[in-house]
Every structure is written in structure tokens, then in C-alpha cells.
Amino acid sequence: MQPTDADRRYLVALTYDARTALVVVDVQNDFADPKGSLYVRGGEAVIPLINVEIERALAAGALVVYTRDWHPPVTAHFEKDGGIWPVHCVRDTWGALLHPALTVLGPVISKGIGGEDGYSGFSMRDPQSGEVRNTPLLALLATREITRLVVAGLATDYCVRATVIDGLERGYAVTVLTDAIRGVDLEPGDGDRALAEMRQRGAVLA
Image (cartoon, rainbow, N blue to C red; front, side, top):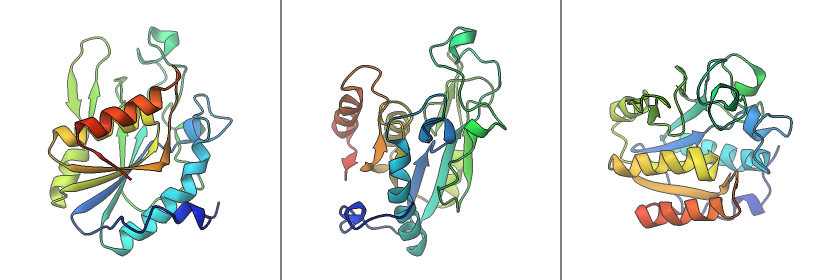
């Protein structure tokens, strides 16, 4: 999947450096492949754009980090076990793998590993007790003295939104690559509302 000239139209003003991290959110088969159990319409189209960003980020000395859902087979996150979602991204299955067309050249942060709701790359919430605990992402960013995040991936109205908001609340400057995200839109307009919320909270939409 090669990017076109049109794919690169928003790249000119966006720069990276050693204090920036490109966070690639949940570009997994179950979300980004039409055969996936929770396919996000158009999800595969973000991959060439993200690959361009990965190349640019690494060339500038930035960190590239990936998040992924990594659920157990039984979890209250799933509809069959009392949650709201179809079974998806079960650990060690095809659906949980990062899409094969995605360039993967950095650490991968797994979330939802104990059955939690794993929307944000930064934190996970137990769907029964409500307890919230951190993923390894915050510590990883601290070791690199990261101050700014660039976020892309899936899906706009869930994991991208949650990761962006958590990042802002933790004091990072956050840029969202709007061409390199797609929304679930369970309700029409959910993706647009998520973008408006991210902007209102202080994210830059590029």
C-alpha cells in the first residue's frame, strides 16, 4: 500500500524531533481489515499515511510507539460476557495482530490485557470495579523525555479520542492527524464530535 501525492498534502507543516512521539493507535486486523470482527470502515486507508509519518518521525529522531488491544478470550468488555462490544483483538489471534501493511519499528503497548476496557493507550479501566491503572506508555515516554505527541490510528471516537485526552491531561502537547484516523460512528457524527472535543480540550487537529 503506497502513499500517493495526495496522501502527503498535510505533511509540510508537521515536524518531528527527539522530544516528540508518534503514537500509532490500534491499527490491528480486527479494526483495519474488512474481514475483522470490529472493522472500522476505511480503516485500511490510514496505513499508507501512517507509514509516511513513521518514516518521517524516525528520520528526525522521534519515538514511534504502537498501541494494541490484547484482550483475553473472556472479558466483561465483550458483549457475550456482559459488555457492549463483539469479540475482538483476542490475544495471540489474527485479529489482534498489527496489520501486516503497517510499518512496525518501535515498542508496542498492549492494553486490556486483564480484561479491562483498554480504550486509552495510557490507562485501562476494570469494567466491573471501575479501577484504573496505567499501561507502560507513560513510563516509556518519560524515559525519552517526550513533551509532544502526534496521534494517528483507530478509532477516532474511541481509542484515538481516549489516548488524546489522556495525553492532554498528563501535560503533553498533542497533534491529531485527521487524515490518518477513522471513526466507528456507532451513532452518526460520533467521529466529528470526538474531534470537536479533542480540539476543545487543547489538541491541534492537523
